[in-house]
Length: 201
Image (cartoon, rainbow, N blue to C red; front, side):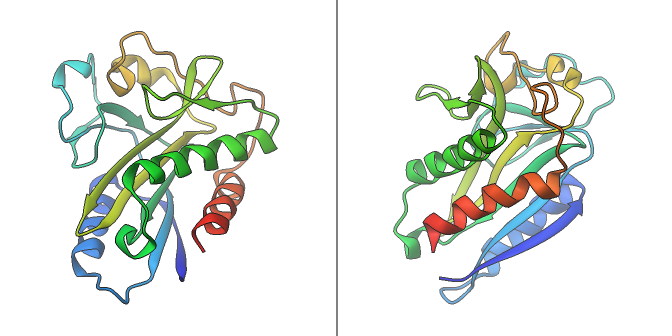
């Protein structure tokens, strides 16, 4: 089954979110699945059932209540974001299986850069020595997924202190740069895309 890859560059979060919804609403049984590589200007997002109390101090950073699962997170320049528009019904994949696939794609890619990471059953995402480096948030509509993963690459981590990341007070975050790996988002996306395509096609 065909997967189309799109490199969007830096895009406004709300405009990209609307584009994902439009794509999902308009697609049909013959539509190719798509992977979108992007990054966003600074924005806090809160999941559909997220609690506003997890936004501690937004300051001048906008807060968007979105329709993905999960709680609060931060997106900003230097963070790799990969959105996955997949027909799960056609591929016979469940949402839990997709979450695991996205986590393992990040873990495998980080290993290629010498970073040992792991997932947690009780808290979706990817962690390095207890610090969160990658997040997963999804929405399923008409049997199709949108939203996806974010991986902290070369980005400022200070804005995460304005929230309880993913709803966990005192959860620390890290990045590839903090782990001593300097790589551009375009390059970092390659092993993740390769991992996903290998297992989806």
